[in-house]
Image (cartoon, rainbow, N blue to C red):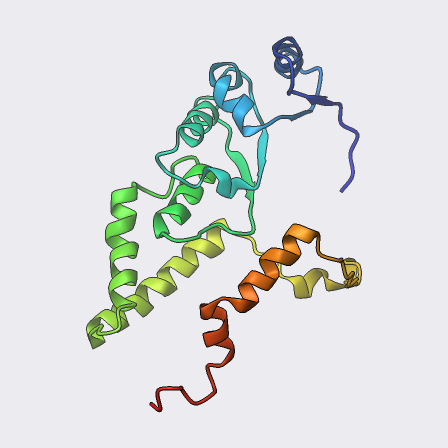
Length: 212
């Protein structure tokens, strides 16, 4: 769907940012492009503007539930009563399940419960079921929680797989370029080749001189 929108950039010098926010508040533009840092630093101003939709690219940048930037932006949108919040990310979760909760809490305007409840219901069971010596109960409980979590993910996450858009993507081309080492790089390279560790690694398949 295409549309005609007036777009303003809220970035750079403070006077320019102020003008852009005034324009958004007065309805002089439909789209305001800005950064996480600008929204966080001007959260009071953004909270006073009525936003129909907010879209955050690379939303995993604010997946830390205790992050100050995330808190400032989330509070501003919550006070602005913006319910159309969308986040784009290729890595919604890296290490901990609380990162997943943080993003769901953000885009849902705090409608997925408290973090402590999320941890008690999902995180603990999933971690225990992944242990090498997990009991049959812990394994079964992990599977149950995974299915429940998938339902939550299906409700709040739309995944776009490469198989869906493969016809829209350009063909990948690899260009191999050989570059001559600089003199200092050549010295370092030869030093590595002569190092005991590298020689031992290179000869790892050879019989040891000690006869073992």
